[in-house]
Amino acid sequence: MSIALDLSSDLHRFANTLHRPMCDLLGCTWPVVLAGMGGVSRAELVTAVTVAGGFGFLGMVREPTSLILKEVREVRAGTDRKFGVNLIPTATPVDLLDAQIATCIEIGVPVVALFWDVIPAIVRRLRDAGITVAYQIGSIEEARSAEAAGVNFLIVQGREAGGHVRGTQPLAVLLPEVVAGTRLPVLAAGGITEGADVATALSLGAQGVVLGTAMIPTRESFAHSYHKQRIVDAGEHETLLTDSFHINWPKGARVRVLANSVTRGERGDPFGACGTNGTESTVIGEEEGRPIYLFSTDSPLRSMTGDFEAMALYAGTGAERISDITGAATRLHQIVLQAGALLDPGVASVLDRKESAIALSEHMGDERHRTTGRHALLATLNELLEAERAGARVASQMVVEIAEPSLKQMMIAVRQDEARWCGVLTKAIQSLDGSPSRRTGAFYEKAMAVADLWQRMAFLNRGQAWVVRKLHALLPGVDEKQLRAELTAMLASHQENIRLVERQLEAATGGAPPGSA
Ligand SMILES: Cc1cc2nc3c(=O)[nH]c(=O)nc-3n(C[C@H](O)[C@H](O)[C@H](O)COP(=O)(O)O)c2cc1C
Image (cartoon, rainbow, N blue to C red; front, side, top):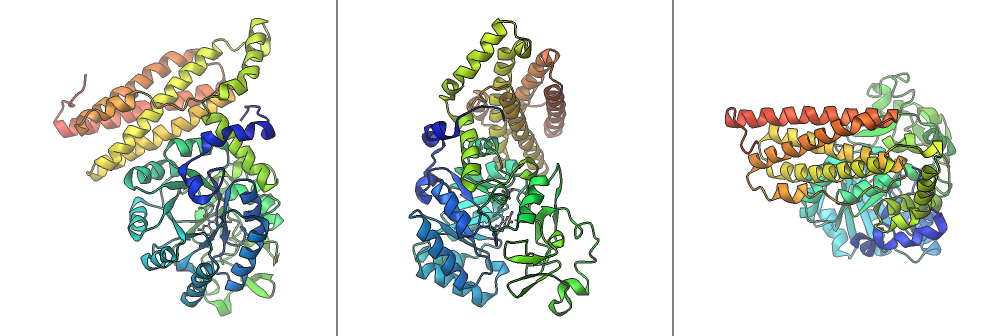
């Protein structure tokens, strides 16, 4: 993104803009949380993130209590702020899990994040000991189970996430569903690597974000430099979901990784005799005397040697947008700064100098900036952004209200599209050095005032038709190739959705859609 802001002087102006109640609960300045990545999120990284104003979880899945004690001691030596520990009950032997929990309670770990199957007894035990508890969830059903179990907040994980992926829905679909369907505060996880992702997640109702992949290629992470570099080198669409790395995990558990010889099937059948039986497993590495097996869930760490290429190279879909190994504080602050610039109502003044420079050069006939109607283009893109945000919110609400499965499915798809176009428009506005609007179009209030669901659906369709008209009028004046292609795709997608909704309306009413003009 191209907004030129000064990291040191502009950062603090965004503290209020980005502050959410979750910051008070976690004792952090920024609503940005380091994921409890097993192996990767150790004391050095957690401390760096915490000192930089974020919040960090130590990734302690299946780790001995001695390591938990050591890492917690180290974090406490580096900061007085709160921090957390991540545990995964389902992937941990019962005795070890019991000892891990007892240790967390004994040493007063402030926050514990849990993942995979929701186990109410564990939540109760931790809460009774005064610990704040989070559950990372992958579906609305799981969110409701975690809420019923008594957790303090949820981490909504979209299928874009690196590492183990619990659910099947993209973040843009699952997040608004959970925000609307539970009363708990939520953090968003999965594919978040830039400020625009944070701004979108906050706009969709999250109180903060969780970063995994973005924090792997940092100097303080415990990942091996091989893993860090593979993320930096990752191209488009290089990650995939697979259940090939499965030793120690329930069958069928999927992880998102970078493609490698294992995912291409060049290392044999992960579920053959070599893959499942410890005694016959192929050793491909070593960590302080502990063998690392082919098809295990271990990822390359600083403390390991071996055939790193064949290990689980966890990465979320955002890997393709990460281009360097940097300090954790720098990565965090860059993301915060971008998000702040997008969401801060007063950011226009930060951009004033730049805007005036462009306006002046337009006036002087500077060829570089003679983008005819740039201001008009930005205004229309922002108008469309507000409309799409309104559309996404209406669709979100309707997903919750609609009971009939195929209709619900259709509305989920509409909502997903609307959220996607919000992202596209936000980026387009940024690329024009504009400031994406934070407002939700008045359409939302108007649509929600329509009580009858069929009539509201027809109203939504009229909103979609307005977008189509707007795009038809706009497109001939758009010179930039990429933007024109994206807006054309947006137009086609709206036309398709209008047809889908019309068909449902016709089926429901035998030909005359209620409320249609
Ligand atoms: C290397 C790596 C290890 C992970 N280990 C864990 C873990 O031990 N426990 C857990 O709850 N989540 C784990 N996750 C998933 C994260 O909690 C989070 O959902 C994910 O990183 C968010 O997506 P992103 O990687 O695209 O930012 C891991 C993710 C990665 C990338």
